[in-house]
Amino acid sequence: MLEYQTYIDYIKDAPLLMKIAWGACCFLISIILLLTIYLKFIRRYLRIKELEDLEFRKEYEVSIIEYLYSGDDSGTINSIQESIIDKIKVSINNKSKRKIIIKVLYDLMNEVSGEMSDSIKIFYYKTGLINDALKRLESKKWHIIAKGIGELTRFKIDEVNNNVTKFIKHPKKEVRKETQLYLVSLYKFEGLSFLNNMARPLSEWTQIQLLEILQNFDDQQICDIKPWLKSTNDSVVLFSLKLAQVYNQFEVQETLMELLSHNSKNIRVSAIETLTHLYGIEAKEMLKTNFNELSLEEQISFFGMLEKLVVPTDEPFVEKYLFHKNFEIQLLALKILKSINLDKYMGLSKMPIDEKDSSMLKLVDSL
Image (cartoon, rainbow, N blue to C red; front, side, top):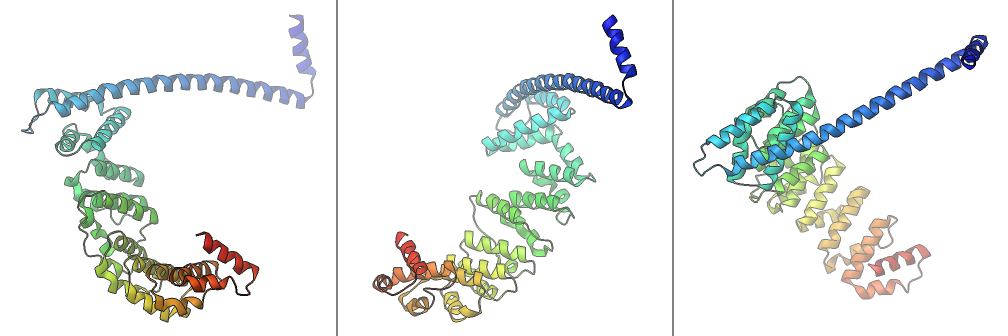
């Protein structure tokens, strides 16, 4: 008791600054203790929640699988399936449980096909899960709309096409992207019709995603891409060039030739690369004639074309650029010469050349 009173007297007699320091110290210690207790409580709660979610997932995964395999060829809903649907309907009112059910259904969609996939769609309708996705489309928040479209895409719900396509010109690119993925996922190349009147840029990442979706289809009957190659939207033209290359569109070579004089350097370079893939001999001769008028990027792309489409008569042209100041052009010129006239290439090593060019020859020899 005496020691405690001594401590109290010490605090009372201490300078104001020390009193403030002791007060702050006690306050911080209290906060740390409270946060530690709160953290332990949260960790315990999350651990329990995780176990509950895992148990719930196992239970409903079994129920959904039972639903799928208890059906018959008639397509009608039997009593067992009805009871499972009623059970799910109660659970989807809980947001976290709904997420788990959606995840289970989506995982099953990736593992099954045909009639089983159709059964999952029917289940999605009958349980009312689709209603929540449709409500999201009515939201004023763009990220909620995007999530709703994404869910409808995963379950291939084409019956709500009109509800989704109205977002194709939405101000937020994320919503536009989800709408574009929805259309292509459900309607393949026909779904690309949004490119016809597209004013905003099509991002590189979206282009990659669209190509991945298209390549998942067995039916690779591509539509006419010429109108898109002539689009005033540069991103649409670039995407169309990717389509021409991936799907070997030899019939559009004439249109590709026109793109060699496009205002955008990126499009001109991409057109050269696409024509290289499609063996555009006429383009090679035209570019060779106008080589000095090309930008450096176009010249490098042209030498990439020349490497693939070279013929012996190209040798005089190649010789002019054997020691070009640009590393890539010089390397490609030496590789091309080596492929069409090995003796002349070997003779270069006997010429009086500087150390840099000697190193370049050694690099080509190692390739």
